[in-house]
Length: 110
Image 1 (tube, rainbow, N blue to C red):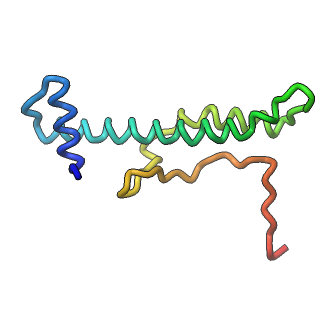
Image 2 (image 1 turned 180 degrees about the horizontal axis):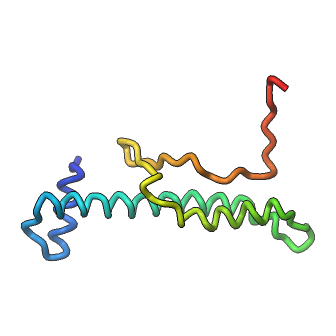
Image 3 (image 1 turned 135 degrees about the horizontal axis):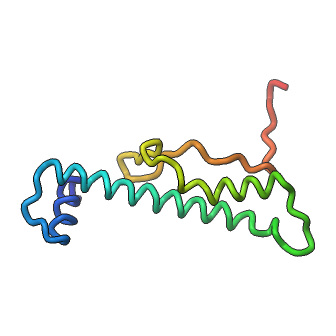
């Protein structure tokens, strides 16, 4: 298993920088992390949109709430990536997904 610094150093060497400074390595790590965050966000977003594609079939009328939800999903990649994290395994940590208007959560205290 490679460390983040080794991965960043290897990436920099592929771009022609064979002797990067620590600052360049740190910057490369940030860039690589951001690329991974954006890739994972897009992947999850694409699945959520795909899950709602049936809302748009011609014999069904999509609601304003459904349209807004789908638009919110499309806009999710505009998020500030400093508000998105990766866990130690490199998996996405993101809690700001829009709420699907068709999912009802029962309140056990209601």
